[in-house]
Length: 112
Image (cartoon, rainbow, N blue to C red; front, side, top):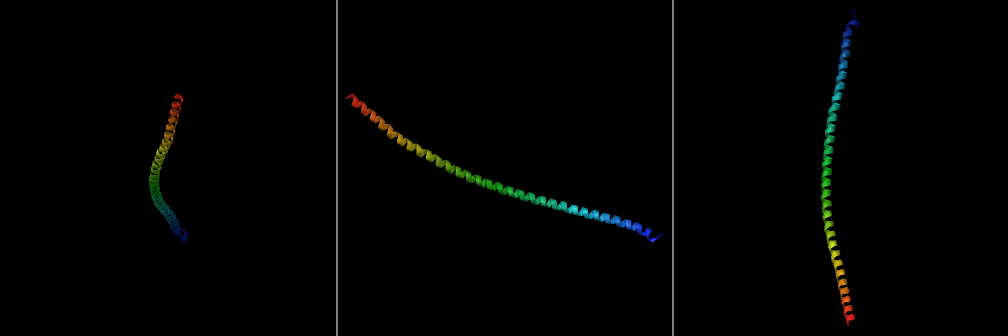
């Protein structure tokens, strides 16, 4: 047996070992990528949920503020309506009495 024939099985084994080593490295990289992907997904999910909570809280605060403002506006509108009704009533009442008084005086004057 010559040297090449003796080394051939060793070289084949060496090639097989290199193939397995490369596969293991690739599989190790794939595993690392998957674990990194999972951790990133968890971080993103957590960040999104935190932002959603902040947004909901902000919206509830704004809604409360709007409700307060709406109540104040409604109170002011009711007061303005009452005030305008009183002004209208005051203006209408004196005119009505004057007309009645004027009519009665004319009737009395014509009957004499």
